[in-house]
Length: 120
Image (cartoon, rainbow, N blue to C red; front, side, top):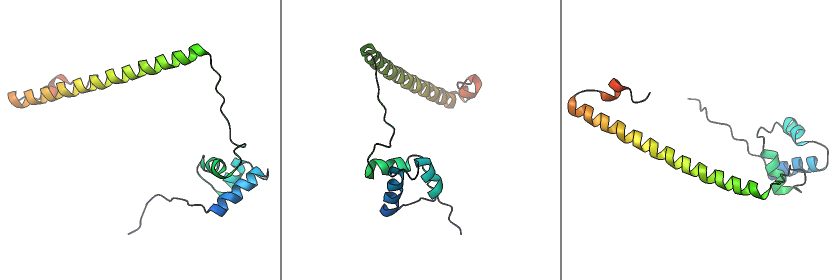
């Protein structure tokens, strides 16, 4: 019987160093190295550069924001947590009501969930 598992590529340290050196030396760009050496993962080479290279070839993110933006972000995060909590409680309430309908259905010999379609 044939195995149909996922193919996982493992690269040697020497190979990784060669690719990083070629990129840092200006011989190849990251995308050119990916195509040339058939490296599938989008972040694979960037991780190698981060671990073994000079890191100056990686994109850097600089975040500039106003002080009230920070406060607004914190407020939105708090509101998001509150909404997630309310949603979780609503799900629990729905589950308990559905369970009650199920129990009542067994008790009275009717399928209340189907009759009143609680999923709608």
